[in-house]
Image (cartoon, rainbow, N blue to C red):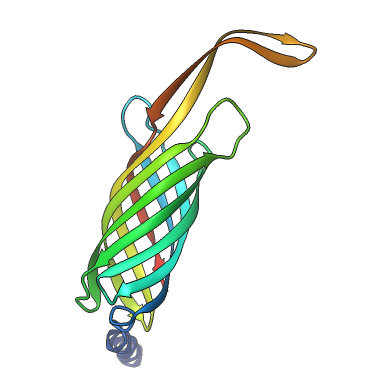
Length: 183
């Protein structure tokens, strides 16, 4: 028992020694995360999300710029975004501000379209090893979507002919919580 405790403690101490390596260097940086969205408002949708972001640490520790892609199960969307992140290089635990902005395309073939995406969040990174950390964040995801309501139409030879279509834009976003890792 004592040997196991000493071993675990030495691993933790070794991770602290490398904790700020990626925070103090310019260069490539990547993120991968899983999350959930708790829909808000009359059109908010609960959803699971997965995303990956890759880019460049421009100012060590303080400014990251990248681009990413993801998948949102709520309306079956494919978000593509630019990502701007500012992180305080405080050592093993580092708080950050993150902003994703872009467009989500609709993957299902129906009368609905995707739209603009705006996702600010705050979080914390726990540096586990050299150039590797675990992250947790919470934010608000604004996701624009267009829905269509067919008010009158008829099938002719198996094909729907629409005579009146009402298109409405909605925010289907909500509170999002993400956990993932940085490398």
